Image (cartoon, rainbow, N blue to C red):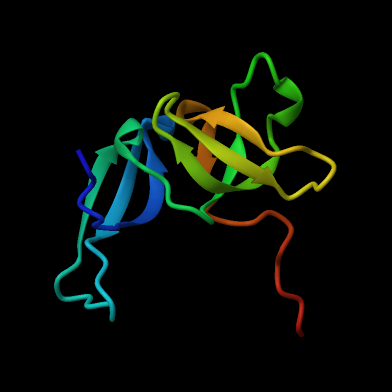
Length: 114
């Protein structure tokens, strides 16, 4: 069955990452009056392409733990994301969804204009 195509904006994790607070549904143009905030199980999330993520909890590829990348696509068969890493020396990898977390803030990217 095909997804509804309705998108929500992730806001933050709760319960040590077991739940994610999301806002939506997102419309174009955005309409804050129709958007609601609620909590969903992390495993119910489907990340869209270009979502920034960080890898964690990997055992067979533990060198990728803590690495930042971007979701390119979802493999339905394995419930894994193809992640392309910020470090271009790393090859893209299929990472199970329980081993990626949405990166809400990029580390070390503070704006020092002042």
